[in-house]
Image 1: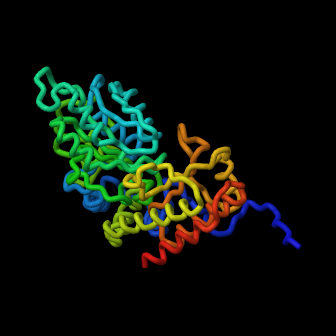
Image 2 (image 1 turned 180 degrees about the horizontal axis):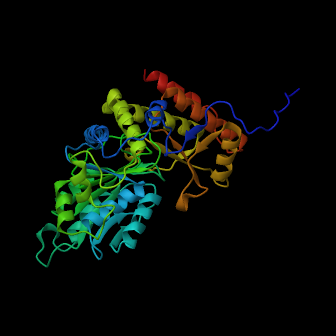
Image 3 (image 1 turned 90 degrees about the vertical axis):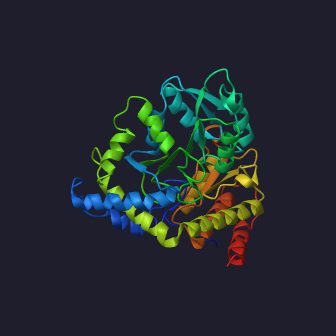
Length: 405
């Protein structure tokens, strides 16, 4: 005899499993850090807070130069990168690696830029060879004499959150250098920073865009730009009209620990604590943890007999895995069943991938047991939603995690 089903209730015991690739789970330490009175943002205590944050951010970005923090979303940080360095009518080179590359293109076009948008299949990252070929063909590339280069910037999403594909930034920088081209390199690291290895200075980025709600383990609300000397020179020489997003105004005030307008004080408390946690663990250990948990996830997906969306293993993301649904099955039906039955949120398929994939986030405040619980929830969800798969994927992930001890 089957036990009676419990009566419906609005209360659900245990914690909700937030397994989307951002916003990520906010650790208790960060929550407690934000749970305090707001202080005078023109006083000495705030200046000390800001100074600690600017100091702690530089190693995460991989730079000794300035990192500018805006009260904004990642979209605001995209816009800040553009309006400080480029002008309407400037030509830029962008690549269709997924939904967020497409959205960044839309921002660029709305600000008056002319976008050369290289089409893609959403299963591969940026091809460094294509970067080199496009820049070499640009006027002024490779020392051509017929005029100045038209392409002012190469704009790349490092980790495409909609697809689980990571582009190879060092090879892209090398491609720009081989073309002898002076374009700025702008890199969106919104879903990779603090989780996947990244080096703003050593990899030759001019503007690196980040935000708070992914690897920094915070709520949304902070956008960031790390900037090179070349980018700062471009901002001094031109750019677009700007006020809220102006780097110069920010840096002038930041030098003494302040902001030109009211900052997001309590988020900054949380950011200081998140930076402390990252540095306590050690960035190399943070990156290794994410790589290990990502491979465990991929072990599970392969064992289930499902297909990983990213087609090139060298470009697998260590912060999320996008999983393709079998033909005839809707990812949204599966996601809804998993949420209703097991109180777990998985990432939705975005843009052209709507209904075709689900995304497992494995970044931020995450350990082996949390991941195993999430994968067990996925496997049970596949079963109750009637999605064809082979059982045992969770056990394969557990075996990988145990073998790695």
